[in-house]
Structures are given as C-alpha cells and as structure tokens.
Length: 392
Ligand code: SAH
Image 1 (cartoon, rainbow, N blue to C red):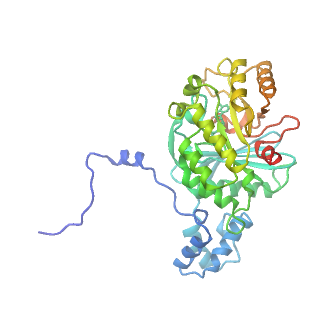
Image 2 (image 1 turned 60 degrees about the horizontal axis):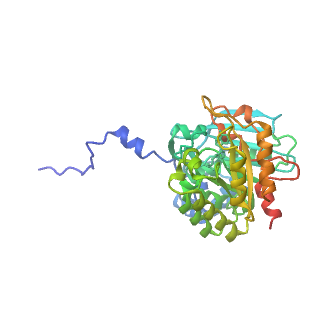
Image 3 (image 1 turned 45 degrees about the vertical axis):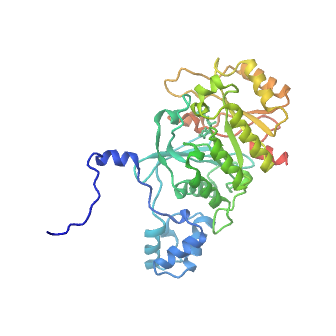
C-alpha cells in the first residue's frame, strides 16, 4: 500500500465557511516588529543587521513607506527587504477633504478587500489622526454605522500603525493648511472596538510611542483609546501602566437605556464599567473622557444629565458630548441645541467638566457615521488629552 501524505480534512466544513470564520491576516510588515525583531528578520534574509535601522529610519523617521524611495539601499537589498518587510497593506480607494482642507478622510482597501477608514484633522495648534482598529465592529451599537455591518476582522499591528505613518506623512507634506506639519495626536475612534483587538492595539500603541527609529515617538498622553467598556480588557489596560487617555463610550447613565444603546452593557453594567474607568484614572492620574452621543428624546432628558452628574461628581472625568450624526435610515436624530445646552448646564452645575465635540468632517463621513470623531471646541476647553494634562 502506498503511503499518502496526511492531509487534514474537515468534510463538513466547506472552504467558504472556514474562510469566513478565520479571515486571513495580512503579510508581515516591519511595523509588526520591534527593532530586535526587525534585526532578526533582516539577518534572516542574509542582509546585515544595520539594514533594520536603515529601513526603520526611512519608515518611522522620514515617513517613507515606499521602498523605491529608499535610494540609499543597494537595489538588490531593497527588493529583497521590501518584499519581506514592506508589503503594501493599505491601498487608498478614496480621499475626501472638507473644512477647507483641514479634515481629510481616506478610505482604504486591505489586502483581502476589507475596507477601513482613517481621518486626519488639522487645528491651529495640532494635527490628529483618527484610526481604525478593526474592519467593521462586533459591538452592534444601533446608532453607529459600523456597528450595523458587524465585524469582518481585526487589523494587524502594522495595518494600524501604517494608517498613522501615512497620515503623519500627509501632515509633514504641508497638506493640512493652517496646522503644524507634525502629527501629534492619535485617537482610536475610527472603525472597530480597540479593546476587542487588545494585543494588537497595545502593540500598535507601543510602536507609536517608541522613539524613532523604533517607532514614531508620539507622546502617550496624546493617544486616546476609546472603548464601549469591555471591563476585563480595561483592567488589563490598567496593568500595562501606560499613560494613554481612556475614553469610555457611555451614552446613557442608566442600565435600562444603555443595554439598548451599547449592547455590551448587558454583560458589564454602568456601575461596573464606570468603576473600571475610575480605577484607570486613579492608577494613571489621567482624566478619563466620557463619550455621550446626544440623541433626541432618547438619552437627552434633564434627569439623565442629573444622574450622569451624580455618577461623575468628584471623579477625575470629563464629559464629551457628541451631537448624534444620524446614520442612513436611522430613526434617531441629534438633540435640538437648546436641549443640548441644558444638558451641558446641568452637568457643569454638578461640577463635571463638559464639552461638546465639534462636527468636524460631517460632510464627508457618508457611510461611517462616527468618523467625524474626536475633537471638542468649546471656548476654554481643549480636547480630553490636553485637559487631562492640565489636570495633572
Ligand atoms: N468602539 C469604540 C470606538 C469607536 S467610535 C467606542 O465605541 O468607543 C468613537 C465614538 O463615536 C464612540 O463614542 C461612538 O459611540 C461614537 N459614535 C458612533 N456612531 C456615532 C454617531 N452616529 N453619532 C455620534 N457618535 C457616534
């Protein structure tokens, strides 16, 4: 009898189903690795170890993502290294700008056809990148466009980092008029739930804060991780001893309503999720940001402002109200301005620092309602990260 190689088969699982269950991650990229890992990869390709630093200086120091532009590398080495460490991860499909060029959204296609978005927002004193951590999202918040489509897959470390490096390059080119050329802030408020892709998001943060050429050299305090409130992951984040800003998407101060608006609340209740956020603030000394999308006649009642005020009174917390950006076909709308003002007034009366996020990028966020993310514009208030610094 001839011995045949053993090929594992699962006859009852067609290929298409298996593919759906375990989506393919992209090829390895240098941003997936720390400097030691890059040295090992480079020597594994038969190149001298110093090439790792050379590549890293191009990518993180000079924001060069295309190997062809790394002309100080011998052509043969360049081809070999690029093939293994600089695969194309993100292909731009569309680039949209608004706010007189101060806001720019990029729609990316990933290697497997999945789509994600990033947004660059310029201000007179800073430039912020809003990045995606997953293709789609599994959290199913009913007011969020991404939540409706479900989760496609986690992004790799490099797919996250490459969004930032690209946007930093756009800023450095002077394309964001009226803003400094250096990208200074990153918010994980694009597609996806960052803490549901925990190890990769943390690794990406480490890459963003590592000094060049290992990483991008951003300040931890200028990085905001936003979560629906996955309590075990929030507790893990506390243990990392990082100094990033934590934003909690609360959206309702009571379990009845939050169970509906943020379905993960059915697992971790308001008290528990706020407890974890307060512990993060206590351990890091960093003010947490409570995100609250104001939805007309849903969560904007004065009594809910008062309840939120009581929950946050005396805590190291700041409320960031977001005028709801209605998603196509949604039954919900933003609260009228007088209702919003009353909500703000009551929170402030309770001693809670409160700002209203601007509607930056609203005209270009089309399919993805929440990507107008992340910055607040009330007189005297900066964004949560800057506020937290003042609070130190
Ligand atoms: N999954 C993370 C990050 C994603 S989005 C989180 O939920 O925190 C960043 C913020 O935009 C979240 O607070 C989210 O609730 C909010 N958001 C989503 N859709 C929105 C919409 N249609 N209008 C206003 N804010 C929205």
